[in-house]
Length: 89
Image (cartoon, rainbow, N blue to C red; front, side, top):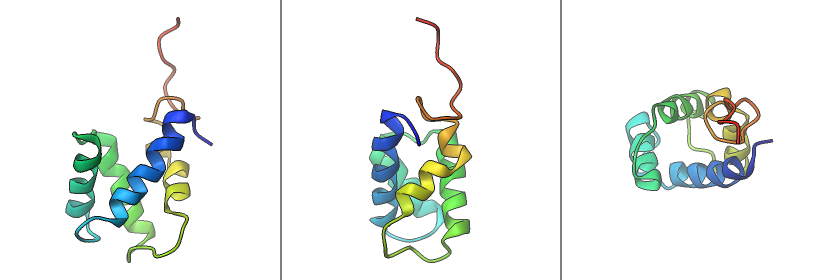
């Protein structure tokens, strides 16, 4: 389970992927850019892993949950279980 940001970002990213113009890396990258306004490097790895696991766009639920379990997602989203610790407050 991820922190608040991950709980919000994973479903938004999954939804953006499912609404993309195509089910390929370039389309998912464009969807990421549309959602976030930028394309963090780690999101390319997330999109690549999604495409490897789902050669065809999924039609049911579960993509957001899959994204939250990816180390490439969890390790880069603040509050994620594998995220690097932030500065001490």
